[in-house]
Amino acid sequence: MYDDPQPCRDRIPGIAAPASVEARILGLLLPYHRTTAPASDGGHPREHAEQLAQIRQFTDIGEPVLFTLPGFPCKSPNPAKVLGHLPDEGERLSLSFLDRLCARVGEIYAPGARMLICSDGHIFGDLINVPDPHIDAYGDALRAMIRRAGLRHLGTFDLRQVYGDIPPGRHGEMRSRATEEYAPDLADLRALTRTDEETTRLYRGITRFLVEDTIGHTGSRSALQRDCRARAYGVIARSRAWGDLIADWHPRSVRLSIHPQRPDAAKFGIRLLESADAWATPWHATVLRRRDGSAELLRRADAERRGRLVLRDGRPSHYAE
Image (cartoon, rainbow, N blue to C red):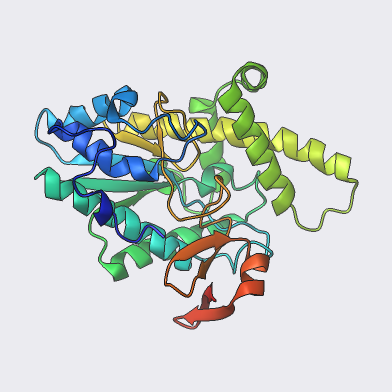
């Protein structure tokens, strides 16, 4: 469990001498790097030139560092994975971890840092078969969770803030405008999937999630696979549209991702909670609290076998061994 970034107070892997402030800030993130690279790669700040440059945009002029993190979209529609459609212990622990990470930046860099949670549920809700009212409820509950916990370093951002000229509830129009303005051509994306290893890995991972999260399918397995492969391209295209939209609205930021990233990528992949699955997130899994107090992300069905259900504020929250 990543409740406390304290262990990386003065430790930057491989650095003995005093480091630049941007390297020290990046050093706080490195223990939580989510990457597909070998364990020996990406453990030194100098291997992340893009992130150092992004941080330097703020440290050179003495401004608070802004992290942008696309994610926290909505809960998976698969009841074998999650406890419901509202945020629970997984989101609570993850948000607390991100807030403390920003607080730790403030201990080594006086202007501090803030984290913008860029909720991307509405951008592809129709492709993942999650109704927009559930996405709204999830986002509203997430903001309430941040307020109640006093997580002062965190803010939120979603499509409703971008397209305020569109009447509330007309999410399809918002999705269409974002897709038209920012999404890559699907033919180009398919070609890239055939040649770029990271894109191929992302495509396969999203296809797997879509297959797992399709409930009530009555056709053949092969038909389901074909449908999910087609939808996966749409999810990736709209995710990239969302990333470019965020970059337009926040042109200076340190770009984070919940997906595994290469050390030389424009985004820094970050793990929120411990899991054996590199793709696991709080919105695709359930928290199991171990006897020693640590937390692990598991499918709900697996957590249920190992623990008892715990309620928080009268709602299912997590399992405890």
